[in-house]
Length: 260
Ligand SMILES: NC(=O)c1ccc[n+]([C@@H]2O[C@H](COP(=O)([O-])OP(=O)(O)OC[C@H]3O[C@@H](n4cnc5c(N)ncnc54)[C@H](O)[C@@H]3O)[C@@H](O)[C@H]2O)c1
Image (cartoon, rainbow, N blue to C red; front, side, top):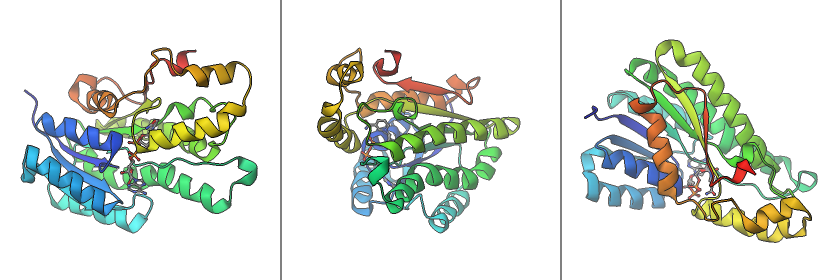
């Protein structure tokens, strides 16, 4: 049996982040839940505390794109004893063609999906280096590699492609300290964000012709949407000691979507 880990999960009030928090708690770890949606965060924390014990669940309402809030978060985590694993799951989707997108919308998506992880990695690094076996798992997306047929998600796709290289660079920089960093990139998964993507696909992608449209009409080879728990399983594997020889890599959990 491995020792309990001190874990921080961003985006923990919903979807993949919530499922990740749950799997760590189920295995006996302590989890700091981070989300900017205070109401949803409180509800999630109460439910998880009732099931796994209030002493193992610590909620913090934080917007990961705001530097001062992130600095304060990791100062509190340090005061509470430190950090072994960081899971970066907070994220938002974009909607709109490059030609129509405002600079404000572009900056908002990049702020949450790319600057947010940067701010968290910057503040978490000193704590992870003190851990014996520190690890990071960032939630990327197939959108780092594939443009949805018809387009309409450029800011999201650019943010996720940037995230992959940010985490790989962090992995190289922190390997000498025994800290690992990897990415789990889901295909479409049944969450609130996944539902938004599906709606976008229905409105934008149906105007696309040819093989790309086929791909969207029929989805991934496995022909079903992922469940948040299935993404969380991959996150848990990469965060823990079973993956101690794995760093700077990306695990696509997408039902074969990027294989075709
Ligand atoms: N669901 C999918 O189909 C899918 C596919 C590929 C990648 N992803 C990625 O998975 C991650 C989790 O998304 P999800 O599908 O669980 O969506 P979700 O909407 O259910 O959960 C995202 C959570 O992030 C929180 N959040 C958003 N902005 C934040 C901020 N600035 N600071 C703190 N918290 C913030 C939200 O409040 C929400 O609770 C995202 O990074 C997303 O890009 C999702």
